[in-house]
Image (cartoon, rainbow, N blue to C red; front, side, top):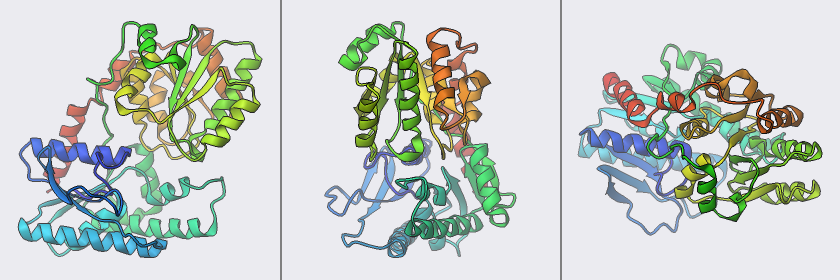
Length: 394
């Protein structure tokens, strides 16, 4: 397994999927090594340890400042070194790459060996870099980095025997950009939801009481969980809430997550006079997330770009919490199963406000069993399918 980080070291959806897949393979009796980068140069934990049966092997990030190209070469070199060492200890039969640079380092190390290589694309590398732009127009340095990232993705697709994507949307992007490299290697294998953790509650009000004062209100609660950055569309959500307030509607919107836009979002909330209606909760502890999904009356997903699977939709559905979502990227593949009436165009605050008003006035109600949809992506079921794809290919 090759990934940028082990999920207990660094938060990240792709890191969690890769790490939990590694743990599953180990539980099934496979010998699994997980090559990744330590959290920071000052990391004082073990560089090699066994976690849930997985041999987690880390390299330290560079303590020196590096430009983009130097950083790319560093991760490739360190990943190659570790994979070469592991292959000497025990010949590798399969590579499962989940982060572009570590996957490329692993596949380069083993390109002369008889090894099955699966490149799992959680989101295109170039899009991931561009999504971190502070504004809608990235600068020259970021555009150059994006071109380099696209080349890394293309090289990975050429070296891989399979290109596995979390959604039809992601596979479509990868095929359009790297048609010759992907060829007929592409397949879709979505991620999973922990249905035993994300469960409905009998009494949402009682659950809110346990979550703290911001949840303790006698009006409907909208909830979202997003990193506070440009592509997440949170400005659209705040503006939609301003429209709802102007229409005289009573509600509360709670926004979980941290990120660079916290200050500007807070200013936007205050200038709109929404301090009592829209509250930034900050980063939420992992152990509270399931309760937050279940306590909310409705989840709102206002993303503007680059949502390549939509795990949060499944987590809400598993709690029988409906989702108002933007009609962009891979989101419709899951969210539209409630019905098109729950969707709005990204960046359109009026459409979003209309959907939220429809929910508040009980004109917009779930007409399908949301948890039944989530159960189609139940973790044990999907993990077995991922294992079948990797091991049968090897």
